[in-house]
Length: 332
Ligand code: AQP
Image 1 (cartoon, helix red, strand yellow):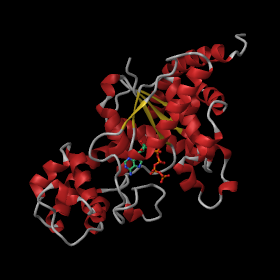
Image 2 (image 1 turned 135 degrees about the horizontal axis):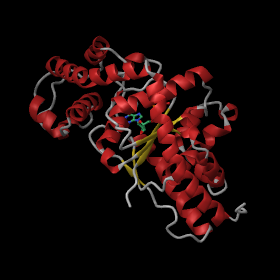
Image 3 (image 1 turned 120 degrees about the vertical axis):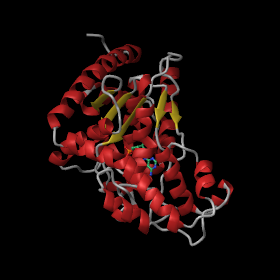
Image 4 (image 1 turned 90 degrees about the vertical axis):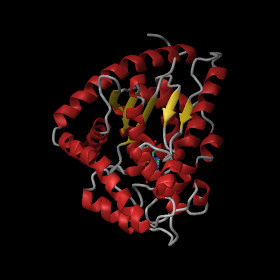
């Protein structure tokens, strides 16, 4: 059976990369009844002010709903409301090997020069992620390109657990679904850096809560080379900034990069950027408006999260009961 699951960290402002690489694609698969959670436990691997964390958790949930997820189809919940995530993560901490985690590039990037001052949680972050996924025996996880390595670790953990406890096929070998023209949206200021919420320059990204003027101005000022757009898609090679803007256009318009080139090839950025800005505003404004409305109605968001958590707990508890039996914990 196919089970789709994904989540986003409750750690601050969402951007267009999160939207195109993740959010938009969750709504596209909702007929498969996906499990979509807010990773509040992952968020605290770096310091979060408690009041801010609560608001951010609701903000991510509001973004899910505003980008089209229907709670009647998708199970939407905060990770921390399902204790089984933490229970399974502990067991997986005892399955995963130090050597596997030592290879994780995200930890290296996020811990920077101060590894010894990072939280232990930041180090075991991908183990909790494996628990998030395997608790629901998810077969498919729609994510952006940056999550590929973590998904490989999830498979390694599943495989070792199945082997160690003589339970072939107990956990599935989950596939990352990294699809579409915008699996790695780049910074508007630097075509070699990922669009990221931790980039100190606000000009580098379009935030989901940016208004129309901010979106248009960021696109107008985005870095590009002086050449017109190429006549063929191959012509985008070696032109990271141009390629990024074309990919953003394609993803927003639900067409391919080749289609964008067919339409705009040979034209300069003086023509392409205003067209992109207009499209981005047209697509993002309704989402921003709905997000703002929901952020002013925390009771509605909490109702969705509570109902989702109840559904998620049923499955989570079931998996943990099976796992405990396999591991040899007393069934008291
Ligand atoms: N630039 C991106 N392009 C495409 N997809 C992206 N994602 C993130 N950035 C891009 C995808 O969004 C989902 C949520 O990611 P997360 O919960 O891991 O959030 P994050 O890592 O905190 O987001 P950032 O902006 O990447 O944060 P920092 O700056 O902390 O690194 C995932 O599916 C991810 O692939």
